[in-house]
Image 1 (spheres, rainbow over the protein chains, first blue to last red):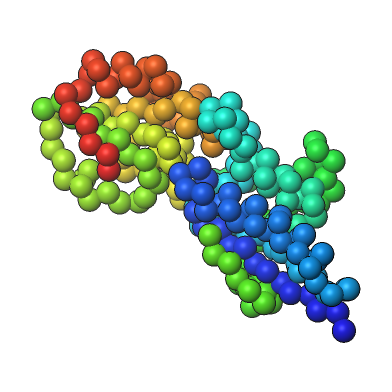
Image 2 (image 1 turned 90 degrees about the vertical axis):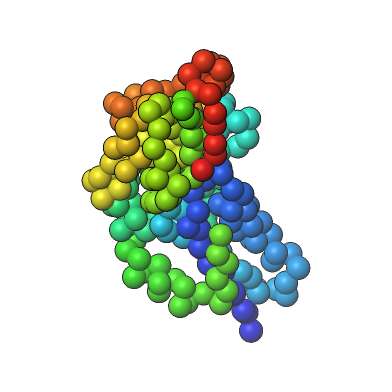
Amino acid sequence: MATIKKLLFLVDKPPYKSENSRLALTHAIASQTVEIHLEDEDNVEPVLAFVGDGVLNCIKGQKALDAYGITSLEAHIKNALLLDLKVIFCKEDLDKFGLTEDNVIMDAEDIGGDMIANILPFADILGEMEAADHILHF
Amino acid sequence: MKLGVFVNQYTKTNSTLDRIKTDNLGIILVQNGVYHAALKENGKDSDILSKAAKVYALSEDVISRGLSPDKLDKKVTVVDYNGLVDVIFNDYEKFIWL
């Protein structure tokens, strides 16, 4: 019988000062490759949720490559969307910072992605936490 | 005393900074500290901006985070790395990181 393990990567740290959010994104993306080590039909389903100060990772127009010489968290979020990961931003926390879907990375159309990010209330993120087999906090 | 204070975190309270009293205080927002200059959490400016101090923000840290130097609070002077060196050498005698 196929077993799908749901992994929730929960990010509540802002970008760049620490490696937390970068690690969350790279781990979430990398977790998809684990299927090569699993039995047929077994798999993992990573979900990325940004809450609290973590929603600051999602602001559009990051120029970390120009200023720091490193890939931006924006590029990583778009890669996650390109690979069809479910990406969620907490609505209450976006509202708190005055951010709307116009300011945040909602899609990866420019690199060919079809997946759209979700802006959801914290209650729905709590639902994702309940549904997850493992929660990884960054 | 001419004191420059580097703030590199986005935290809601900074009890040491709150208690510093000096005639010539400069607050230099770097790394995640630049969010103090850009965000209005629940519609309110950061408390740091209400202090009797000259406030700077490092442009490289601003643009890296997807923030626009043009949209920072009017009280904040945006400086690049070269400008920050000038501030350090010309405007303050001592510095601390908080």
